[in-house]
Every structure is written in structure tokens, then in C-alpha cells.
Image 1 (cartoon, rainbow, N blue to C red):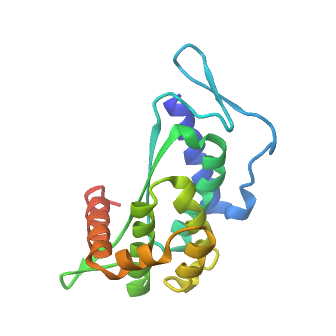
Image 2 (image 1 turned 90 degrees about the horizontal axis):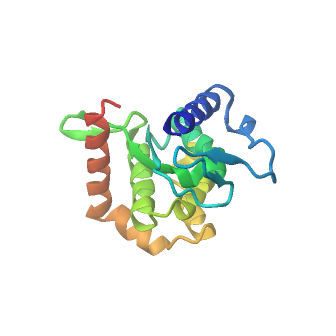
Image 3 (image 1 turned 120 degrees about the horizontal axis):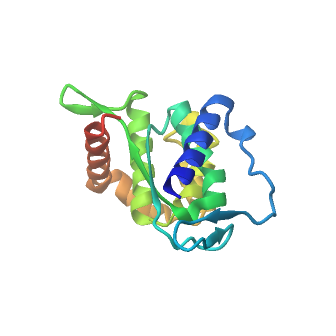
Length: 186
């Protein structure tokens, strides 16, 4: 089971990087799909919660990186299809420069990373933060601008995210994420 799900995830992310998100439409929309499990041959169907051990999926991205955006967007059809079988963890990449964290795409990306980390911290359910990411990623070149409108349109509390983003909490979340990504050699 773990190998099958990992293969599907790997293939989906590879295709996402190669062809772009628009080409990754779930096949057989409206049909029921089944995922066989090791334990007793039971299945998890689309829409039904998977009850077996979840596969850990880690994404190490940058909020303004076109490939990172495509990786996150590429997860949507996977999560739609087999999301209850996946334990998704999104972390952010930066490097140290003159004693400060420096994402590859500059300070706007650092700010974007913080907003996304705040969204995941305060809205840990994927069905809350992924629609926000999906909205904001449509205009990823503008990051960090536009997050407030996407937060509002997806039901996230703008004031709560603003407090995290502009306060010390957001910087702490970013530092922890960058340290973890660095420890994984991402």
C-alpha cells in the first residue's frame, strides 16, 4: 500500500513539474475509485475516509518558486483522489546569508512563506489552508500581495493571519521550517 501511494504521489509531482498543473485533471471524475489495503483487502473509496496507516508526504518548497507552486498545485488532484491516505507536510526552503534567513526569491518570498506557515498553523486542516494556497498561487508572482483577499474568500480570518504574519510568531514558524528543511538537505 505504501509503495503504491508513494508511486502515485511521485508520478503526479513529476508530471506536475513537467507539464504544469492544468494537465493534471483527475481521471474518471464522478467515478468511484478504490485503493486496496494490506489489511484484509479492505478498500478506501474516493470520498470515504481511509483508515489504514497514512503515507507521509513531505514537500519542501518556496512560495514564489514556479516549481514549488506547481508541486503544491499538483497535490490537489492527488488529495482529491486519495487525500485521506496522505499525511502532508509542507515546509519552506531558505539559506543563511549574513546571519539572516534568505529565501532564493528574496524578502517577498520570505513574507509569502510566513503567511502560508501562519495559515497552516492556525488552520491545520488541509481543507482550510489548501483552498487558500490554491487561490493565492493563481497569482504567485505577486506574493506577498493579495493574501488578504484569498484569506477572506476562503473563510480564513484575515486579522488572525495578520497578527501571526506581522508578529514574532510568523518569524518563529519560518525559522523552524527553514531549519527543518536544511536538516533534510532540501
